[in-house]
Image (cartoon, rainbow, N blue to C red; front, side, top):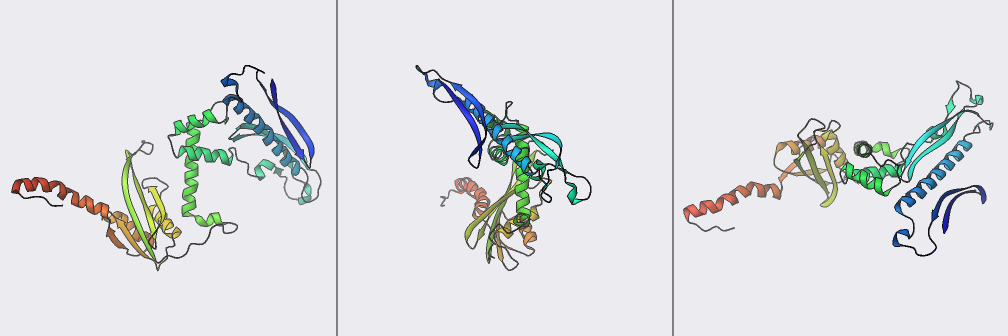
Length: 323
């Protein structure tokens, strides 16, 4: 038996194009378990070919829409034919798109119109960027690259762990920017509900050290993390690496407070380890002195040495221990 897969392009119920993308052959009888349905490699091939045909058709339609001048209606002259590589979840596609010379009806200097540039078509699709960042943030880069390369028809050579790392860090930078510059994402109109002012906020903050990879010349990183309680209810979490060159701890702390409704009239309480460093950071962000509280975990850490010493002291003086 032979199965054929076609891609058909329609516009207003008219068939514009019909192309054969794949053939799959299977025996008519005596089918083994490995011959049921499509294999992984056959599925990758089918998806890659279908994706290539769809993307090129969309680019052709985009180029045809920009052929005519939007002002005079006349066809603009074709300057050349450019190719571009588009990496998608279902394969790497080489697309061709015409560039046009802008119509003279608008006056001024000669200009080139490239539809792909006008529509900000990136070399990597947003869905693939999401998979890169999602897997790159959960497991080591090499392991994530191996999983994506094995399951998805991204490209014939697989996925580079360096590419995955680059996209993950780029998305992380955009998330940092969204925290510190939220107004940029409200243009041209507000996209978020306004945050109601809070009267009472509690900031639980602590820091620790983790082993570094040596890329920044450091043996370990200082990680600051915590959470914010708003009116007695759990709010947002926050974290940053203090030694990172792009990190401004005061700006991040101020952004976390603003996202939870902090105002100059808000009463802020800080639960920390009792040291001045982290508490002073919250004071700087709020521009006033906050109420400091030593949390139970650090209180227990202060009492733990006494608890460990008590059995030894009791054995010396011959007194029972009561806890």
